[in-house]
Image (cartoon, rainbow, N blue to C red; front, side, top):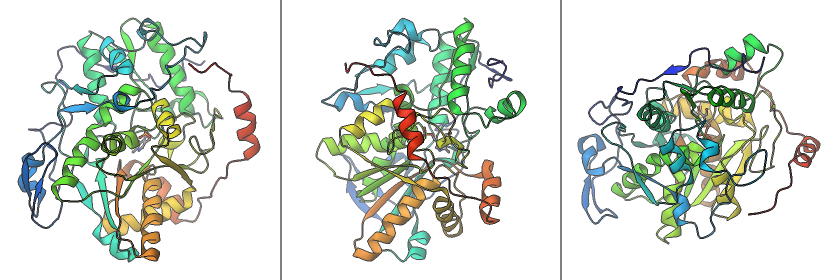
Length: 433
Ligand SMILES: Cc1ncc(COP(=O)(O)O)c(C=O)c1O
């Protein structure tokens, strides 16, 4: 029963000879314009670039990062090791090998600061940050709002940033199939199909789908598991977002005062913020970094661990886990967290869509709502803060949620404190390592 409910209706076949290139320099999809006044600026690598009125004209000068950044290397207090769910002992590489290829296991445990990715196999498309001038005007705020828009990828979100390298490292090791779970539909294909078909009375949960995909991978020698969030190597691959954005912000002479991203498992948030946290640790900048989660499914702000969260409209954030590295960075005090109810998020999304012309996925509506709160606060105080937000995907898969919202059928689900206490009471006590 459990296995039938997995999303492996169509395991993704990969052939070892396939060239995987979703975002490719030469296969750049579309062109994206960052409007700004011309300026000469010094980049951190010592070079000077001239940011043009359209960055399109000079994308090479800004460039694509050729490496991923590993925040663990720069943390003086290292995160505790992951524990084996049965023994509660630190997980060994051989425990992970039924699930992941060797290179990803290495990356998972790595303390190396940078990882150069195999550029002949995995190439990234330039994804430009936009200034949300019309939203600024609508809000009548002195704040300058930028958003890094990852919805231009073929999948419509930041997910290919890690899907491509994961598929590549599996293919390199001769793996024939990969299995996965999906939340909103952006990462995998069919949790909804699986739950609707096999568990009709359950809204399912990402947690259940993950367990089932893991079972399949563990039982088949030619199959491995790919996860779209949470794990260190996923966060590592996503740092291409922040690395690129640092260069883009430098090129137009802006330094973010506030960086905002939504968190499900934490990958788009980490992708944008970790390289900026490195700059913060180096004393170069001092932005406030905020993770935003749904009030109905809180992880960082409440420590939720219920197995089947309420059916909110942001499937990708409807997840009870959080990347351990993000929890660690949060505990170290390098970032803040907040929770916002879904109606406020959709109100913000509509303002964003009407002013900026892009329909956000339900997940980044949380980042948008937090950005609007921040911008309206700037209006009150008169501060011209620079707000940088992760707009991690478009909402074309989720128009049904917009329909519900616009028809007044959406409700805010509040999270019951008693449920949180009961859930937390079930967390096994383990010694701190
Ligand atoms: C567009 C989008 N944003 C955000 C998320 C949440 O994941 P994460 O917190 O890992 O970025 C998802 C997950 O499915 C997603 O599809």
